[in-house]
Image 1 (tube, one colour):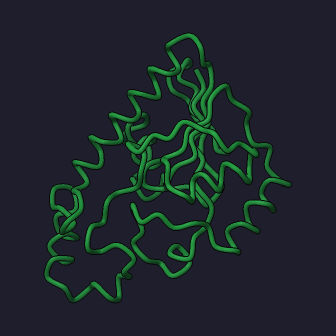
Image 2 (spheres, rainbow, N blue to C red):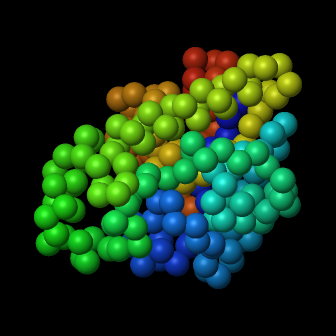
Length: 190
């Protein structure tokens, strides 16, 4: 059972270092060019099934890297819902009380009108369970998932606790991890 986790390409929000969780924006021109460049250098894995979070940036990444346009959409694998912090930068938010409260209690505090990290973890684990069920059903031996940096970090932390911290697990755009679920959950970098 093989699980490939690949981060979507760069967006304008990524370039500007904005919190962008569930806002449905597409890739920027630079992100598109970077993915085409990576595609020429990296051998992306083939799989029995392709899954995206459902947001435009994941669908566009799949289309560029694989030419597929009809994946399974799994919204459980969307990025954290940053609520009122969506599309804002640290500089814009750093003096706001709600933001400071969230940063100081990031595991349990909610982003106003968004979700907490605990809720995010629970949602990702629900999606991960669905992926594992797809892999154990006997029809699919491998799945490529195009998703978000935070989602990939959460999944890797789940499988490999205490190896790295959450932020160290986040791959570059268009990169990710291969997790072999047959061999004690070993991983390699894509």
